[in-house]
Image (cartoon, rainbow, N blue to C red; front, side, top):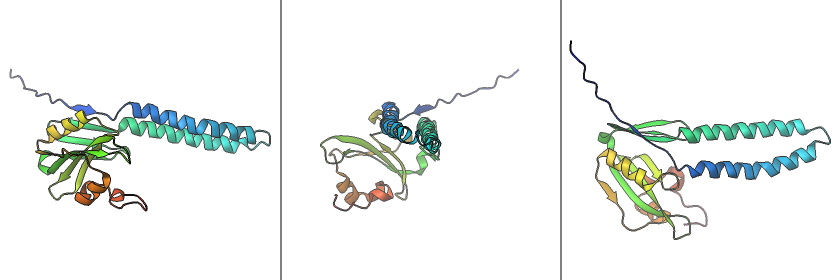
Amino acid sequence: MEQESVVMTKSVVLRPHAHLFTRGIVAVLALTTPVFAVLYWLTFPDGSWPLVLAIHIIAVVATVLAVFAFFGTTIQLLPDTVRERGFFGRVTDIRPGMVGSVVLLDLYEGSTLDTLPQLFVTDVDGRLLLRLRGQFWSREDMERVADQLDVPVTLRRESMTLTELRRDSPELLYWFERFPRVGRG
């Protein structure tokens, strides 16, 4: 009797920073609790509170959907693929042969001296396939993704501003980031 050889493939799942979930829930509660408390207080005497309750339920449902979306956001490292499941559920598979370049740089945060890492993965035509921002992903996760793609990484040693990145490599940015805002760099 022949034994079949089964090769187990290991996948690694990367998730956004966990503290973002807590911050988001605290922000929602901090915003909605006082507002709805005042609305209930104002509408209860005249009997129009059911409308406030309906709006409150909609807000709670939207928050629950956002929680599910947050927990569904992942980067999965498979033996031959990097799979991104975005916040809205879109799944993108990136195979090493598709990748044209991988750029890792530190980008200044707003008007501060603080920087956060950013990983950009483009296809062979220069189109953005994947972007990992330091607000959501750790540098270690970014390096793991870059290693998985097995493409030389362009590492920018000097930190950049968004204006410099917009000028030097606009193809790395989302469409709405390519245009400076009125009065801002």
